[in-house]
Length: 133
Image 1 (spheres, rainbow, N blue to C red):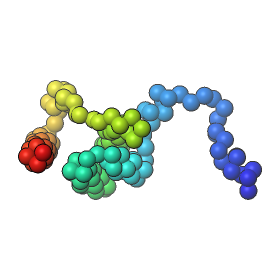
Image 2: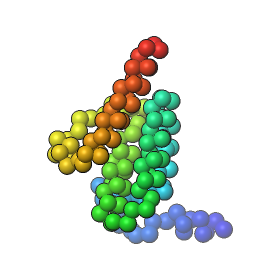
Image 3: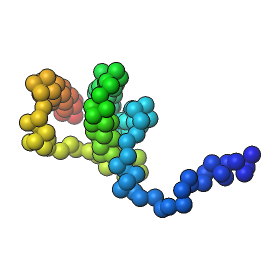
């Protein structure tokens, strides 16, 4: 039994791990989904609930997508999001960033409406938190 565990732990190749290449690879949808929800555990409760609901609905909406370009775009953007989440060890907190104007210009009217709804929801959430403290 012990020999098989050692064999399982061995690398498939003898080449050193290229971290840039490894971070550029995509995760399959289910492990990515679980990793995002796990990363949300480090958020304040209000942000976690908002994030969990949003992630679950987005993955549910994209479950039946068959276009490879859409799938790759969807998974790569969520992987970028996951990499920006706070980690347990460092305790850093993601504060957000400005939306790239070129991305903003490429959005459809529906996407802009969704972005506006997210903005309003987060403003309401932060206002309610500010009033509590």
